[in-house]
Image 1 (tube, rainbow, N blue to C red):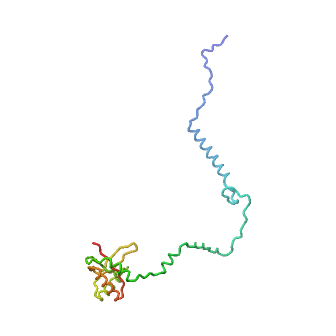
Image 2 (cartoon, rainbow, N blue to C red):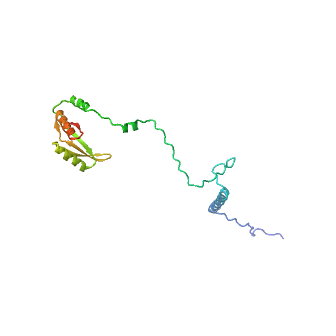
Length: 189
């Protein structure tokens, strides 16, 4: 008798489980880490081998005997200076004769101009006050002004303003007799 195949269910092969993309990514990552680790180990030099940077030289360097004593300090040679006028100028003192000052002063004969004679410029106020007292003994009135400069505060001892250049010149001559050098400055209006 013939068989009836109508009601018999066909046998199917078991269904394959599909793996997730995350599993594949994790496997690829672990495989990459493993390969990089092997590569890193291969590139490490042996512990007893000398360390070379770059390509190895064609011939080995000679070994140099180490010195027994302390190392000697070698001082570099000082470069030869091309210009010597800095040294020359610092060792010279140029004295300008008083006639040059008087010639310059005689050009301005305006009797209404005001002048101040600066006697000293000092870094300590006590020294400036001492000079002011000594100048007062010569009969010259003076003032102390404070000036802020790059290298600190300076105290200038100067006379009170006078009218005319002839009076400024007479103050200068009085100061010279007392042992002080000074210079007069025209006060601009």
